Length: 258
Image (cartoon, rainbow, N blue to C red; front, side, top):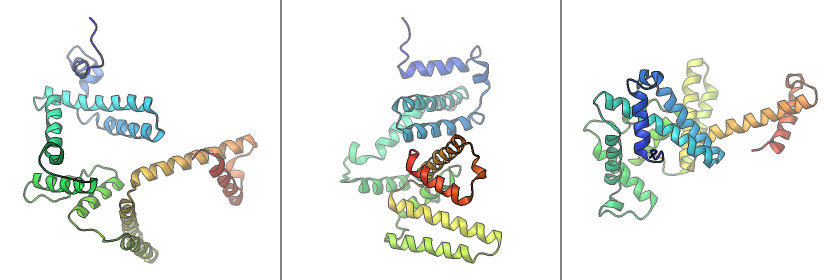
């Protein structure tokens, strides 16, 4: 009987077979370090499928991401460190521990109460002397990292009391950038502006990384429309004056998707 490829155990065996001595030469020579870029790439491809609202593509990309997890677990198993069962057991245990309002006697009436309880439980898990921010991965994209450390600080009360204060801080940072005279000062102040922008986004419930990614996509769509329009008219975009380019940009905003 053919193996049911829809079962998790089947995929686990396939990955182990690829890593076996008589398996795939490419898969066998990979290490945790060598496949790190693929983990990031696959995660972003999942995000792209979500942005495109393409369920078929999302299914495929989640599979590719799952493969990366299984490869890392298989490498760890071969080194005698842990295996995929330990990974699953660890996250299952953590989910139960961090949801006492579901699996225990604690009560949480809304999402805000759940988030507060989550932070308290995470703080109890930290080793004595560890910073609240120490477990935020420094390899995250800078905007996401900024959002995470701000959210954690806010979880213990270090936060503005109202949005007005957050917006005033952003305006203050822009003014400081205007006064900066050296490149070093400009780098410093521009960083403060970005940090303040992340805070504004957090207060508004906006994922700034996603917002910027979508803005980049809109720009690319509209710019491609400008290029195609010029080609249809037998012109080059660089031949247009700045005012003509702006007029074409406005046309792209109306007619290009997004």
